Image 1 (cartoon, one colour):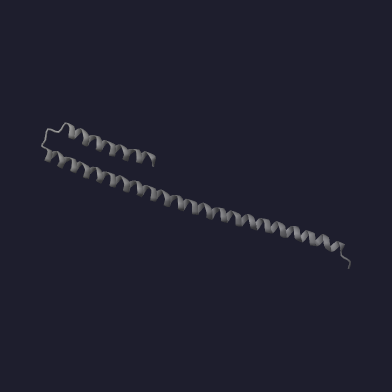
Image 2 (image 1 turned 60 degrees about the vertical axis):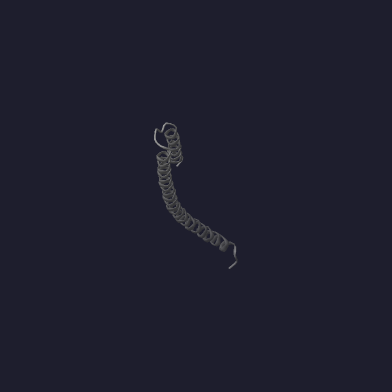
Length: 109
């Protein structure tokens, strides 16, 4: 994402520099120069809006992908924990059965 913002900053800087150089070396009349500057500003604005939209779309898409991945990981973790819980319960039930059996030995008939 930093690469995209650097590109956007470069485009904007280039548009401003180009407009400034164009003003300084323009052999045209003032009216025509102002029209060219206005057109250049509109083009720069359009480019900026287009790049900003692309960045927004990229961020939204990445966030959705990460959300799906996170949800899948959570499901997997919950499933693993559930299986491990069943194993622990089974082990505890076996141990309890053994303890009950040993306890019967100590009870009087």
